Image (cartoon, rainbow, N blue to C red; front, side):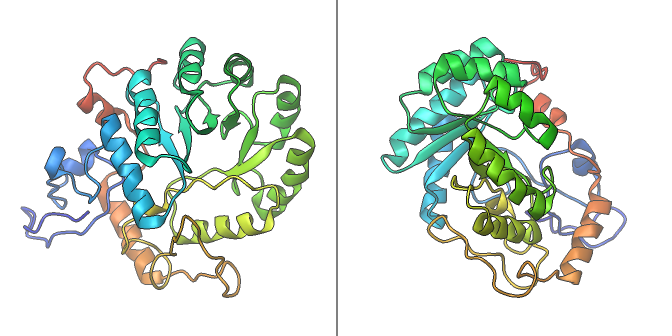
Length: 305
């Protein structure tokens, strides 16, 4: 996603930038003449995704391009019923052989999570991730729906594990190199998951090649990690990674373990400097999705649904 071709009013040349999402400060910056809009004017090749049909088409595009077999709806944005309908549309579009996940980011109330959980139980659901906030609430939804539950919010440290063993809120733990103490911490976590009867996946955030390489290595060294790892890596533009050479390849839904020393990748200092300059000039020093949500839906309050 590039800045507009015209110089700003101060005569400076246009700045090529990569935007995480819309932000009022960014859009007001004269260095960034952003023509971002909706419909045909969105500034990425995937187009706008705000309907179940668009979500299903996006998932099919990911399967064609990268061979993914497991798909997660990052939910808690549209109404719960729209997001349920997105899963139904994806199941119809992708057919047999595709597994589905949904993560409402703990934005739903317990009755909503139970109602939607029962409605999606007939779909090829691999697991139901963090529809509600606490271990107690997760355990209730798990009991009432019978769906496998997963988390990267209510069990994110070793001191939260005893409560989870007692309350039984999850079936799948999303490990994280940052939350659980790097490689050593995650390798210690694995036998605990065995004892608890938990399967393991990997939590993902917006990341570039260094973290992606680390996640690949963890997936190759942690035998309990049998569920496909989450990743945001496909959203990173091809020329915006921080590593030397091209982005790490995804083929048939898999990534090869880098074989060079260390993590197998090297930091590109020029790309890092470019990213740092973009960060300093873009006006986004912290993530805040609220202005965009209010623009899309003036009645949005951010409360539980």
